[in-house]
Length: 130
Image 1 (cartoon, one colour):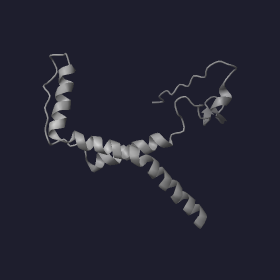
Image 2: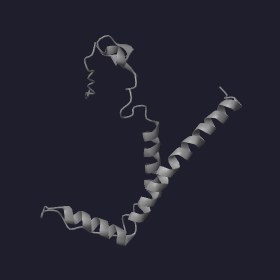
Image 3: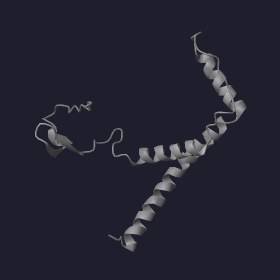
Image 4: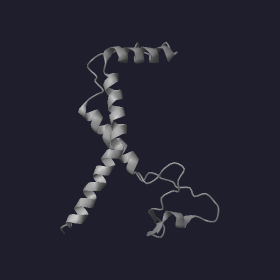
């Protein structure tokens, strides 16, 4: 099934708007990773973190250039994580999403808020089936 030109244009505009909204947050995170790669800054940060640790059993803090934080993989992970965070349907302080769930005993799909009873809170158990 081919999409019409209007649908493709709307999809492209949606992706462009998303990129423009995420770009400032992404660039800030990229600058922070870049700054942490400077040896002197990393040494200061890590040594300050080492001063806070009270346990004599902890190994000494070691700073090396072999473990870079500003890499393509880390930037890709930051971009993906920020995109997922922005597009999630549940947000703190807002109404919960009313997604579909399957009732195990009856084997039928219902909306999650259809399972509420009066003013009692709804508790979901995401258990393991293994």
